[in-house]
Length: 476
Length: 95
Image 1 (cartoon, rainbow over the protein chains, first blue to last red):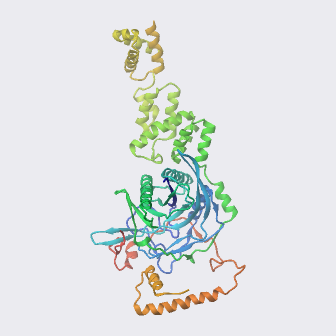
Image 2 (image 1 turned 180 degrees about the vertical axis):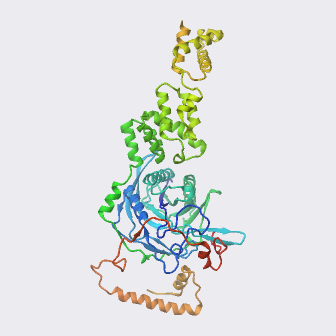
Image 3 (image 1 turned 135 degrees about the horizontal axis):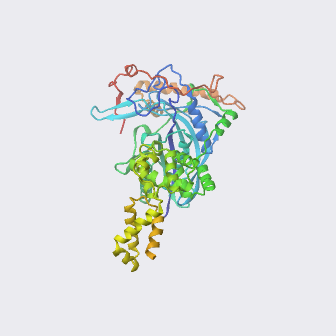
């Protein structure tokens, strides 16, 4: 039998606000345990949470960018559960009237284009962190993360493969980063993902029993966990056993998932309307203002680069995969760099240098004017491409002065044909054997002679000029 | 709705409460009476009445995204029966 995997995602994204969702404590990552807390976020009696204006704005922006309809009259709800990661014993979330609904995210995989439907997007607060201390066999509770603002984005069960899931997450991450509403750093937990998965015979329209997988902290872990869980469920059904609806935890080290107990066991959240937060009513003018302020997103940029600059789709995807990289490219073009050359430098040297140093584009020191100058020097024939790459490596880490470096190291391309001719003649005279080889039909000898000329000129000659002059002399 | 001893135990479990044998009987009866009152409310005709989500006529109460200093940690931990100077200590809950 052929099986089909059906997947839905719940993604938690931490919003890039300065303060928590309902109080003025900082959201900064790290910090000594329990130093970013106050009576509001630790749920002391008599305190009153007040919604952060930015959280609302970011959530609406995200909803708009994910093609959702925005809820004009919304409110918060209380989700009750007793667990030490939550000192209030309830989480303020949105169940009945989430801020956004019914969106769609277009994705692109090797299998083609597809749209993933968004069921809803809602605002909520994060919980604290529990770390078990084996020495004292007790759990330490750190409430710094309590009240950090999150949006949870829930999809319909529209995924069929791990590839589609990864494509969606990359698209989501890209969109939210472009919007500036989240930095989406998986390693710091600002993008977390739960995978709901079931299997069914291909062609069936009924959904199988699903499991939910948590603790997926990288794209790689997500892909492996999906493969593992689909296989596990198919095996069970084939053996005549049932799939049990449960929450499973992915163990990255063991490459396996196992059923969780405790908090996730038999949940009954007893939701009710949050009495501390008054309702939210959004005016058309408010929404228009946010719509007008939405930045150009990656997809629109890709289309524009293809249309205006004639760049191949592959180049457009590479460059727009990161907001800072796209901004760098646009700055290069604005400084007069030919778009295709700018793209080549970015995809080759820039990404290479970043990856060799383990840096993100936003952390790059090199500025667009520096690279634009280097590209101009190559276009003007003052540097050859190979020398330019060496200069690039030299100035990359400090955004050094290209002209000064070229001058200091005497790297300017030799465009003096008389000098090149002289050196060529000298090289030919010194290598009669190679000249004879070449004339005897050994093309390889030509490359050797070019290399000798370049060496004499310390690599600064224009390779085309050397080729032309050498050919001419050898013919003569 | 019929309140059974099992349901009382289930609710107590969700609320992390330990219910003594004698109290359970009383609670069962009390919960029955509370829910019976809901049946009275059920008899009201709410046709055409808009559901209310908040009792005060206020909306859009928002604050600016500006950091204010957090509470001193000693003060925060002072109310805990078992702090270790940095964190609250609770019985083992992490698997």
